[in-house]
Length: 458
Ligand code: HSE
Image (cartoon, rainbow, N blue to C red; front, side, top):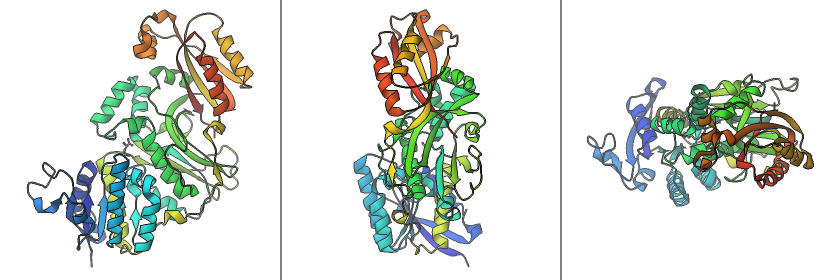
């Protein structure tokens, strides 16, 4: 006999409507789940799908969902907002749990900001909170990491967690498009957050990485605690230089790994060799790689023994599929088994490496006013900081390319005077590199802030 489940939805935007559509189309029925949406909260019901035909389904009072006597599961798919929005959303989730509902949420910012209170309330109420849709859109990753792979001992979790950034970098790399042009397409295609700055600055990927790190390494980190760099300053010429670095490309990588018991975590564009599978994950596709020490046993250094999860990481449909998976799971468990008390995961790491102590080889792209002696001068500064220079590359560029490197700041500098070049550095730490670059920034030949990116290490 089919299990009957009534759903209340908080939010009627792209994801909320997609969830509603899937449920109404009976997508869970073939697995014996007879689901129905009985109430939808939105601040502005007018104009929303179904409002014309079924206005009684809608409410502008969220407690009519969180306290609805017939609702079993609350689906929370509200747009992420500022701190006050998150506080109100947290109150609604807590209210739903206290009223005996289980919750499926797609709101990563909510869990990062208020996870502790939400997990405590879930445990006290004997209800479950699931959040598969919070990380990497439609890709199942929370369930695999917390269930299927729970016998693993985590070594690293990393990947491409922002579809918008991956789409933009892919378009720039493969079609030579400008950053601005590719961003406009990502917005038009509905991949970007309402505020696309959250995507391109790495904040969206940071929130997802913090969730992955919490279930993998037991960390409790807030945004701002890890090294984060956006893709805004990547230029088309960087792909030309990256291609010279042992055939590499540039990917916005989110990475958390255990290094001698400390957590090394960052979200940053990186120079990634094309032979690594992460380099081939293009477009809006997300990917999560997980390295476990149990399966890695005996593998020699550098061998790829990672679990790989890849798929659609953005868009209403993919996110809704993940939410429906959670609804299915909650129904199968009758919602009375508190799933994943994240707060109880034992920490696998003792500390988080401070940003300045992150170690890597680096790619540094300079833009200077051409004159003799510059490379020697820069290398001298690196030498004084005990930073070893690995390679120096200088390519020919067209006038348009050179001018676009300086953007609005190009005024008064003729294209033939603008000189970009790249220096790669052997292993050093971020603190040393920053000190050297701060000294170089004072030189009068520097036309733009140098762009520095870590080079992928196995
Ligand atoms: N805007 C996000 C992305 C999708 O581009 O990946 C939802 O997290």
